[in-house]
Length: 137
Length: 137
DNA sequence: CCTAAATGCTCTAGTAACTATAGGTTCAAG
DNA sequence: CTTGAACCTATAGTTACTAGAGCATTTAGG
Image (cartoon, rainbow over all chains, first blue to last red; front, side):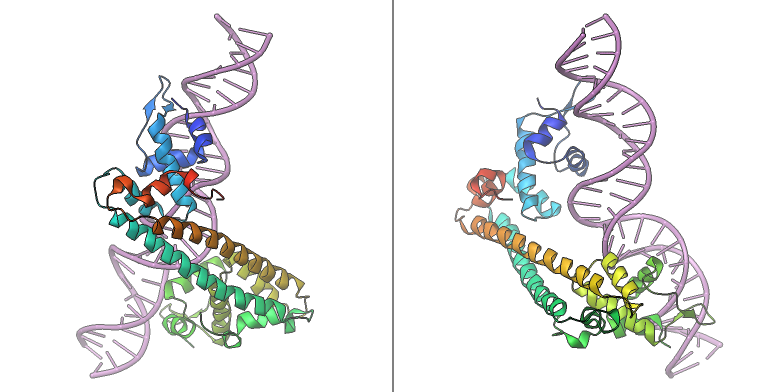
């Protein structure tokens, strides 16, 4: 049986976060010691590692909740799991594309200024005047 | 003089967001009509457009607050504005790089499964077992 | 056995940047 | 003069935690 601190070290999830996940119902309430401290068995560690890994990949707790629910029914079709992961992949790609557009504009804004006072600083003017950029955001 | 709704349409910032920015002190409290409704003059529109554009570029309200402060003093050196924009550019590039790593792993996870039940679904297993991935996150 | 340090407990509030809702008021057009 | 759109304030909810206060338990050393 692991204490909450040992579980935290084993999974890389911080102690307050474990308690937070418990309150959200993502992990089960564990057994308690005589002094009311949480004691975890092996399955809790696996479940928490699952959550950790999925969070690292950027999945929302809602998506993770669904995946956990699916994983409890090994006989169910897994199409839904593919939908969730696929949707997240698409969202990730869209976000990358958006950030790349922003990167291009930020690079343009920051590179074009060689003056030294705010009054004619290109950075400030570019931010103030939307017309100076591609305008695609 | 614009009503708050007209200002919202002119800048693309939603009405509740304008009031929110006012409460944060990002924009000045405007004059009011006899019936206590907000009435805006031209400068408010420019300032709000500045904020909007900077937000679209992903700058935090804190960073925007600093830039607004700088823009009020046209004679000050603009090195600080370059630092803010440059830091944001670097953060954006780092975020893109991170998302691209996640994209690669998500693509790997979602592509490798051609079974049909949860029990042996690659998506679920890949999330449960950190050892199956590159492990660089 | 006793004590001190580390770890644990609950609860509340704070973070970013809004968004939504409730319940009421004002404005402009017909 | 009435109606409907737009306005007002204030509070609470969103996401995924994190920080802090104030107190209890566990464990290792002496």
